[in-house]
Length: 394
View 1 (spheres, rainbow, N blue to C red):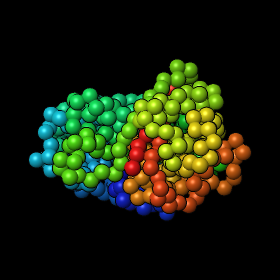
View 2: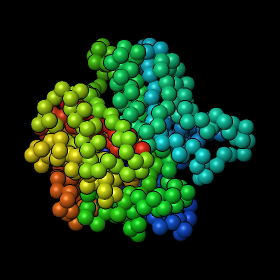
View 3: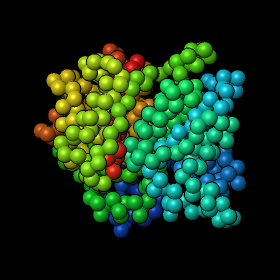
View 4: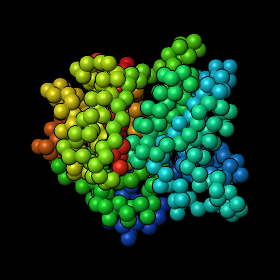
């Protein structure tokens, strides 16, 4: 994970468990013309890393989304312990998700001499292509876009490629760099961004929530068939049991009323996973801190889980990272896997004013230990009606 909380998974995870916030006043540009002046900026360490570790030519040929994903993929590969002898290159897929809006970001202007690379810099598919070239992977490879659900859709696609027998291994994830003046001005126009002038601007499920703050970030996960990972005695964090994807076909901006489409995605994921709803103890919420979305997600969880909804842990980690859009679903899958593996569940921070319409256990402000966790769900619901829920087991 490369997030406002850290440029490695361990840094991000430790910060989450401590309830730290990566949201701060924007410094990468002058936000005085924007109603929203806080966001999730990447730590300075990332910019130092890309300057130090990437060749100058590669730096000119890429935009920051590609560089974030190269960093995330590098850590994922190292963590997996895979070596070249473990890989059959044509059986390794790469599927990345991104909203695509960050490709021509004004804060990512090319270096002198980079203009000749304009086409390859701005190709959305370059995000996945650079990863394939770094590791010489020759299986299926592409970048997909499903707004805020892009990262989750990438995970789902990677699962399919393995299940269908097209691949044994899939590098999947999501990335976006949307913390720009242009994005914030447009978000303020749509009234989806928080207007709070303090670091607690992002407060999912809180009665005084006013919207989200954008953030930069990326995440890469490695999926393997059980046969492949067992053969190499590899590390397993969790199993992905199933997913549900739903197109709302309702409104390009607003979610389907009362979370009915969100509920369909969750129910579909449970059906494909083939486990009882009572086995699920954790839901990594979409939790965007917008008034209507948080309310509808709460309604959807209640519709699917009934009385069991009140026994669920429902954290919203966007409260700490900000909304990383195309990366957020992949980050949430990582969080769910880490929670199942460690028994630690990160909190929803900035939760100070309970909302009677949002009355589930959002793990307010402090992490909890949940040693008995068996299964978790991840929700990602995006503009355009792209909904995805994923079920993982310990």
